[in-house]
Image (cartoon, rainbow, N blue to C red):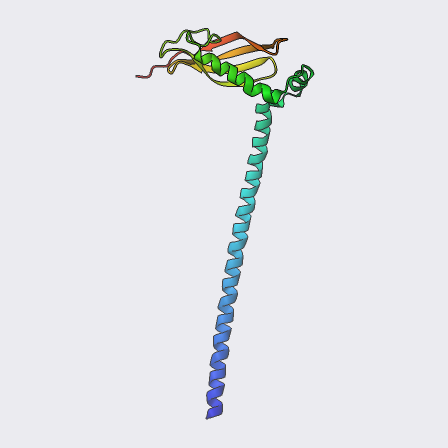
Length: 173
């Protein structure tokens, strides 16, 4: 009797182990399939991000074409003149912004303020060693300037507005 009891317990345990083994094998297979799907999605996303990064790099290079920082010819010209372009950019920006505080208004902006007390330059981008683009506003009206800069012998910089444009205001009722 004892032998039969142990035989039944052994068979029951063997069946239980077989059941657990088969179910575990199915679970492992299901998890492996999920992992494979996730890896595929991750690879697709990684490829799309790589494409996005490549496109952003190309766009950054395109945007840098008209920038003093990326213009090696302008940098070389400034170097030959004894001017450090890294110091020049903030110096020029400070000078142009300082013109905003002239009582009569910024002398580089050829338009009188129509709203507020004066037209002021907001942002500046040095295209190369000679040309600057700037935008200006009086709070309601705004426009852009093309400014030529000249480096004088006494280490000062002269600015001359070559072109300007004041955008028409769009009134939406």
